[in-house]
Length: 277
Image (cartoon, rainbow, N blue to C red; front, side, top):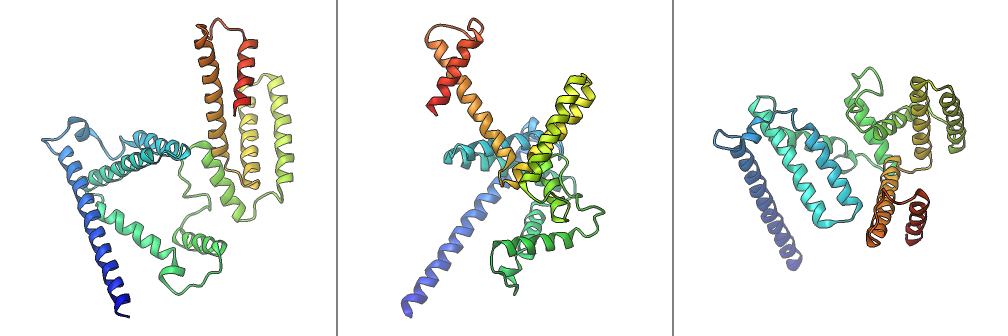
């Protein structure tokens, strides 16, 4: 029993030391950003507003995704730091403008996590992950009950593939959905047929419309197949890059350029690259 108590005390002491270290590091980061924003700081940092860093934030998020896809742990750590920087600098700017503080940001997400996990922080009982997600959505729905549409709340700034996925998922939860992947596949065939008709017509506006419908149907099919359409597209982009780079490298080793190589030769190198993977 004494050994057990000693072990508990040591664990508590270790946690306290860890929290103190994290708190000190986080406060130091805030201090650095406030210094950069001060009159004696960096001109570029001082010029930034709550809205001017939007594209930089998106870029950093995708750099993190790239690091995750590559399983590059060192780069993952670096990119998480870059995202943390953006969260803090946005919060510091908001505080300067009198909107909210970094502490309010942390408090709000902490309260949300506790509120949406009643099976951990309250007396709600759940049997599995499915019930956890059902409770999560019910609580989230209650929080946003003033919204006029179930589609409200989906960020308009999301990349198009992810936006489509969110729309389809939200509509599905209200019963507006196909019955099976087979039904989705039939819809894909239908949209593809309509796209071919529009291409034959030569009407650019109609082609764009039908191409959008076909893409939307494919994304919906991927949802039924439990495949992330965005990840599938990232993977094919990666494969294309690897194979095209193989063509460039193979030609460079022979002292040749892409411009002076026939499509037939490049296709042969492409097929060669496919066999290597």
